[in-house]
Length: 260
Image 1 (cartoon, rainbow, N blue to C red):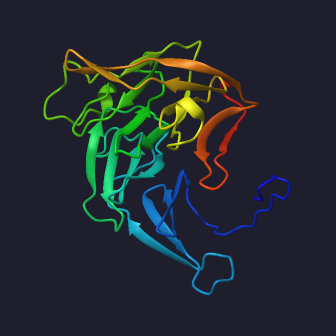
Image 2 (cartoon, helix red, strand yellow):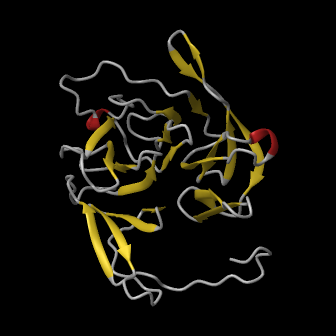
């Protein structure tokens, strides 16, 4: 990608991946979240193609259930990976947010109660956020600031010692007019985008839009927030958005279909 976006080129780096739904570059290494595994792709002979696939970890349960995906891959400043395991609610990790060190060790359930979330982020200050999809047990798109050990509403995936009688509240519920299917979360880099510098953006797959999430305030011991449509209409539903560290532009990708 050149600075003027006049010369866009790509080449295939790796093949044979199984449902790759997350990718991060950490310390110059490419990590891909596949179904049931985090894989590091290594180009040993420097010919521009991966020739060694290293399993970092596959130490979680997966199965053939409906929407049984391992999705999103985020990393915090300490090198911990975060990702969702959805579907397979009968298995120990179904409907959970998982965390492990970048060397694959210390895999743990960070929090539970997820239906089919597609939005996840880790802020520069280490705050983990996300949004689940509306449906059974999830009446509308929710914006969450996750806490370790929290339960976020989807009963079949609670994995608690006893059946929960309530759930951890989101910082806000989004009306269907703003978002009927969450796509992703992105943090604006410090010093970028004027007054939105350092703030959280919510991407809507269903409405093809972008919303600004206000910094949460603690009220009565709970975090509360709101969101406002930024007036940007995309040509398709957007799943992922990233800010380029060089040019500062926001790059989004997604697709048409379903309810976009």
